[in-house]
Length: 442
Image 1 (cartoon, rainbow, N blue to C red):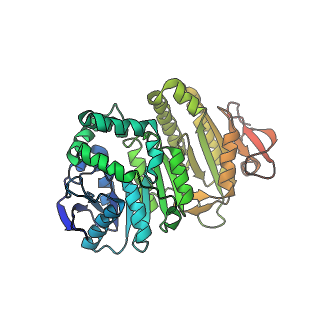
Image 2: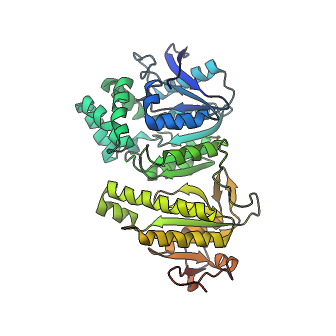
Image 3: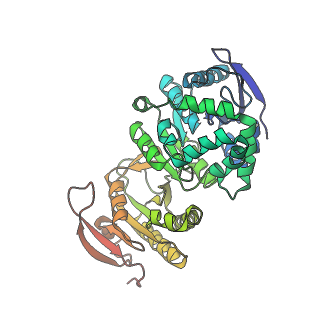
């Protein structure tokens, strides 16, 4: 499918190409301000699948910002203000009173700026690997290498950039190079980078009013998890969703997470047990043991294979025990259960499956309480304690709080008292119990 491309004109006279597909509440998707093509991108398998999922319940709006794609190429003003005018022109043409806004990489800066200027229109804000403070990106070895390659050999850049964003062993990466070449030129790309070099939205971030989802792909090395955590901490009502890998990895799960955040998913992220104030849940965290050292020892590709193996094992156990995945944390998964026994059964199943795998070690922490549910995520002391308990565990261990042990009393689990432990962020020591999952239950 290739949607019909239409045009509108900005307040400063620039013709902007845009396309729409689907029906329902609108989602305006802003791609990178230096690479975008509203027609050719529908031939990109990952994007096509994501778009098709969106248009099943929503109206997808895509536009090429000034200077790239099918919009006017010969444009003097490529500034962030000009990019916001591009969005304003499309919104005015379509007469959208309210919509969700998604920005990718440098398109994230445009999305943030628009959301701050028009808070009455933006119902939800999704920022995917957003470049909100360009100096951070320029300081990474990958960011420096990209810019140097664009300056020295544009053809080589277009042939290799797909590997950076989709993975070097995927055919999709080669297709993306053709899209980049059709979207822009080396000169326009570098002019766009010069504009971005002055972008620092640090002081503006607290002004964002819309509920915000920050998505980070760990495989996109020129945007780091530390940058995304910093962003999520500065934006009110923001939460972070981490995807292990590049843009083609975990694509279906990510689309479901975004649609759930927007309120359109029929399969809500949190659907295990009662909801609302006073609902008791058992929260489980998994973490791949020594993941940083593992990556250094095995290399990115081999380490990523272990991350995928971990994800598959945990998600299979969640399905079997009625757990709900809340989010991927980069090196692990956070999940919720309506019962402590279900969470413990899941933890044991995970460790047994991991033990049967090769080269993978996982530690798990559990706590139960009354977390706060907001925008398909869980917050509060119960969640924080579960996270700290997981951090305390060693490879192959399952550690649980006393409340989990008491809730599961009489269910056949074996616990070993580990005593009171001081956990970061908690004033009083916490008594922990090790779940003896290798031993026969009583």
